[in-house]
Amino acid sequence: AQKVTQAQTEISVVEKEDVTLDCVYETRDTTYYLFWYKQPPSGELVFLIRRNSFDEQNEISGRYSWNFQKSTSSFNFTITASQVVDSAVYFCALSEEGGSQGNLIFGKGTKLSVKP
Amino acid sequence: DTEVTQTPKHLVMGMTNKKSLKCEQHMGHRAMYWYKQKAKKPPELMFVYSYEKLSINESVPSRFSPECPNSSLLNLHLHALQPEDSALYLCASSQEFGVEKLFFGSGTQLSVL
Image 1 (cartoon, helix red, strand yellow):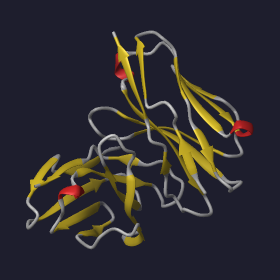
Image 2: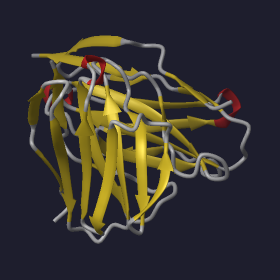
Image 3: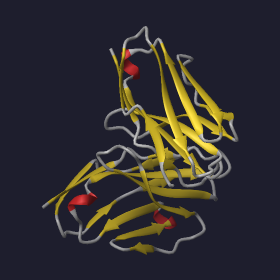
Image 4: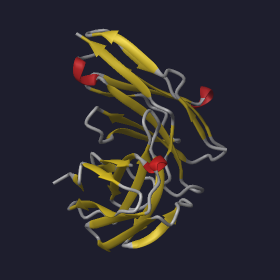
């Protein structure tokens, strides 16, 4: 069965701190995709990244970086030097190419509060 | 234009009312989605349209009726809703139906009295 676990319900940090959001997934497929979405208070989910199961290279985009480790079924997200604008709910999601045909399985989300 | 536009932003309706939610995108995307999101929960998929045809209906009650008049528009018709249907309804689109990244609208916050 597919499952995405975000064990951290809420995290609060002070501006400029680094913060890592954890994501652990379960799937029986060998081909799958992992996503991170950001949902600010305005409501819309904003796509951050998509990785496929064959690409374990870590990725960095500005202050954001992602660590994909198949050995531990984890896809963690780190924000370096956090800013108040990073305050949002962050969702990790899984999609299996064969089975659910684009149906994203979301984790429960981690609410990040960055205080000035 | 990389936007998905949803109207209205807020809607209050009684259980006997009929209302519609609207969603529009002009990115040439061929897949459009309706998600329902309760407070402090992740979004849940309701419907998927691919090339204007209904591809997925996640066992949604018939009081929710989707419609895709053309490739840019997606409607969700509401009738005889229950208070537990109160939620944020999100529309999304993607280039194709599959494992593409989704572009989301900011949602319609629906309250059913």
